[in-house]
Length: 562
Figure 1 (cartoon, one colour):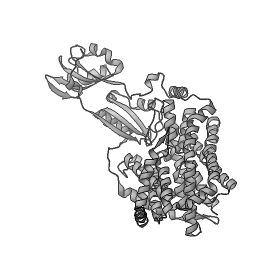
Figure 2 (figure 1 turned 90 degrees about the vertical axis):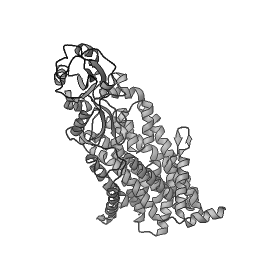
Figure 3 (figure 1 turned 180 degrees about the vertical axis):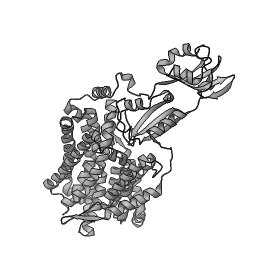
Figure 4 (figure 1 turned 30 degrees about the horizontal axis):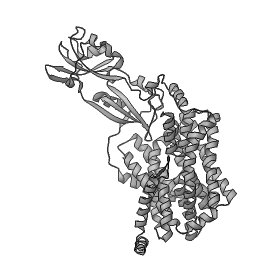
């Protein structure tokens, strides 16, 4: 039976690929305390294990899966990457550059100390920094080295092994550093620091932190009995009392939706949107409050709007509110802001950037009017523009194959680099023109998660029997090198960000997680601080580092593979 199973997998390597993916994901879900391995590392380890039987897995699969992953990363990061290239985010961009440069220098130093080959060196960088993109772009660069196919295979095998050995400490080490060590080194209490930053961003009372509405709106129904309202038109009454908006009138059981010219009569029941502060005066202005379901069930709408208006980009929520305020705006409020899929704090001095997605809800006409001024509504759709993205991968792959020379040294982006550049551009363009190149968040996740996990599984399978010997020869050295690469870059960047760039600690901790493209440590900061303010630092650094770390792969191979 065992021989039959082995024969089937050797004859049909695709079975081994999917088995490594499935079993790796299941293992990756197992928790030891708060730690879990994750699907990518799990798939790579299972690939290494299954690969011991000796399989001929097509090398092209590795490139295909990595292309899916790196394209999704570029598409998601595009808006933030280009949006962050301005004076307002210069400190965060510089922070990412310093961290990535320190990481590259540390990786090359470990190569010099332990005399690793190019494969081991790239694997240490990818695993210790928990950035699989380094392994993907390095693999493309290895394919361009003037060495035999067997030597290329050995380097790729060494890279997979180094990644597997250093990944666990990379994940745990960064979580502990960002969530525990860094705050202690700076003498910062996360919750206290978060409250201080929220006050700087416009919050003065703790109960306001969770949500700051665009306008504090409530819905009420009142029966007209006051001479102050009877005989006036809807527009006249709203002009006298700007804090209210009449959305519906019920007269003799008949529904009349909003009409500014409609004249009110005694006995009418009004469905009203009102500022919370005005509720106490409604009985005096209009008449007694009543419980009337028809009056209060006037139509509302919700919309997700991509910020594309250049006059609003770079402005705070407080500034945006003052620019859009007016009686016709009542009945519409902001319920959320997302940047790169992460919730931003709804605070008066939170700065908007192009590509941010604002969620509005309220009166249909107001939502539509505001959406037009802010940018473009993003229609809820589950359809992906596969043609655009497939052509994007084709164009990126072709661009990656083009090469030039700096002196006598040949330089090329590689397939991974070319695809990343094209995806950044398409993602950026889509943020301004959502009708082009649709790729819903769920599809982005599928591209990224499946592509990366499958890539890890194939890399593990290709490493094969060489893994055991390499672990015996270099295991201890890889562990030591991995620990250094995990800890040195964030340590240097922590002090640089705090004492040179003068970043607020909460933004700094978010930037640390983002600059190492590590969402798990970001989530830990959010949980421990009870605040979403670290997201401000995370998104910019995440976008910049996704590009810079991917570029590190070919550089490592160019320097150590000569």
